[in-house]
Picture 1 (cartoon, rainbow, N blue to C red):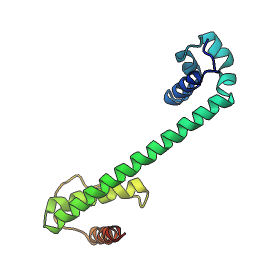
Picture 2 (picture 1 turned 90 degrees about the vertical axis):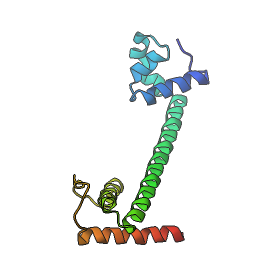
Picture 3 (picture 1 turned 135 degrees about the vertical axis):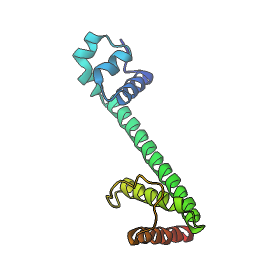
Length: 148
């Protein structure tokens, strides 16, 4: 039976617990407990302070990674928006609809506002006043970002 006095056992148990969807029984069996032992003492073992601290440490790492991935995705989306704004400025009609769809997607992701799904057509014959306002808002925000 694994020994919780060893840090590697604690780390393995906590990692398996966090990575398997918090299934205590499965985590314990994976790190070497018998099914009978796991059934009998999973709450006691996972409730130990050293195990709880390791789980909390892993949760914090996962949260930081999720925050980083979100930020990375937002930066990539912002880069795409800048590129599309430049294409729109050059008169690319297809870029206008892509820009609108991208702005709506960013608004939905950030919770800025809930909008309907972007149009299915890649070609919009004209830009509405609402779309013009969104492009102007984006342009102002980009100018502020460049200044800061």
